[in-house]
Image (cartoon, rainbow, N blue to C red; front, side):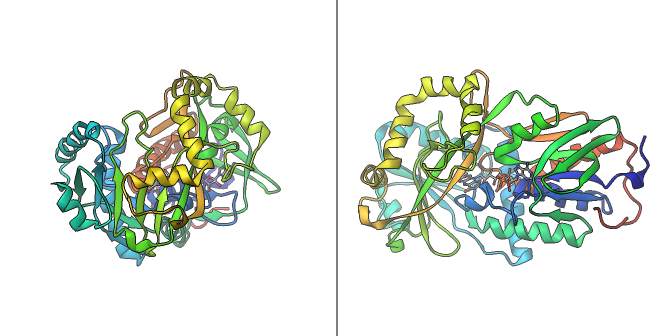
Length: 418
Ligand SMILES: Cc1cc2nc3c(=O)[nH]c(=O)nc-3n(C[C@H](O)[C@H](O)[C@H](O)COP(=O)(O)OP(=O)(O)OC[C@H]3O[C@@H](n4cnc5c(N)ncnc54)[C@H](O)[C@@H]3O)c2cc1C
């Protein structure tokens, strides 16, 4: 067994997105003095999913009772609002409308009302006149209003988490891409591009779009592959058309699909996202192609099974990606007044969706463990909303693993890690 001093840190977190930073934050809270280091390959926090999302604090209404998504979103949304208030981060609890525009959607809308009530959420049913009272330009047959949905600045949340971790004695290192992981009987030795080797008792993988790759670097077969789906947005040139958050009734097969309208904390209104296959894990536009990453996606049998099952749906999404006219027509279902020239391209995001070998899209959050490792393998929406409870769960597992190496919670703060 190694001596305590021979480790550079107790827990090493890969990924400075909101999940990795929440995990480090939770460790500093649960066991002050534990030496925690976050390695992030970019020059700052939240450069990928966390900084390129819709900015919505989800209520949890969509998720199956008992699922991790439901439990963590219900708890996490309230905790996130408190965190933003405590740290002076821009946020607002605005409520949101979920609007049915076709009769065939009404049973699913009704089912959502039941689910919302099961979750104890404040849900109100609205008719067409009440919809226009909230959103004068939105048209629908019926809608529900969920009172606890909100918006916040997730980049600012991530940056604040990093500050708090450092203030508590942790280390957050940017520009530190992990390129090799060597598992030893005493823990892990991690190499960064051009940097030193870091020895830790436990490795926590919160690498988002690269989480399956990082698991394999550590020698753990994740059983899933990340298939990247790009979500493209437009910004509304006439933001006055939308007052708050307006969503369509979700399709149970693709709950993350369906163009919605979101007024952010800065008052701008985003329209989107759609979902098209990305040709690189960080492929924020069609021209970004990384052949090795594309090959790795295509060599996973699950990718082909998704394509075979859902090609019709996918073709529609690609069409709307390539044609602003087609996208505008889709938006008009909810917002008839929108014109093609109202939609200005806005930065895209890429979702890290874990897919099983048989083509099943992993629906719930997925956390797996190996010797000295904890891997967050599926943290799609609403993981930003749910990040504080997710971070606590990952931290709990990491500290349990650390105990196996002889680590004990420090009695006093033991100073900074590497
Ligand atoms: C288009 C879109 C819209 C969304 N909308 C919402 C929403 O409104 N509300 C909500 O709650 N959720 C939303 N989500 C989901 C949410 O943004 C994600 O679930 C969440 O940000 C995941 O955080 P993360 O830390 O796991 O991943 P990320 O934010 O992607 O962070 C992973 C980090 O790991 C780093 N990394 C990767 N590999 C390495 C390596 N080898 N070495 C070092 N660092 C590495 C990356 O650079 C990155 O910074 C949305 C997502 C997308 C894509």
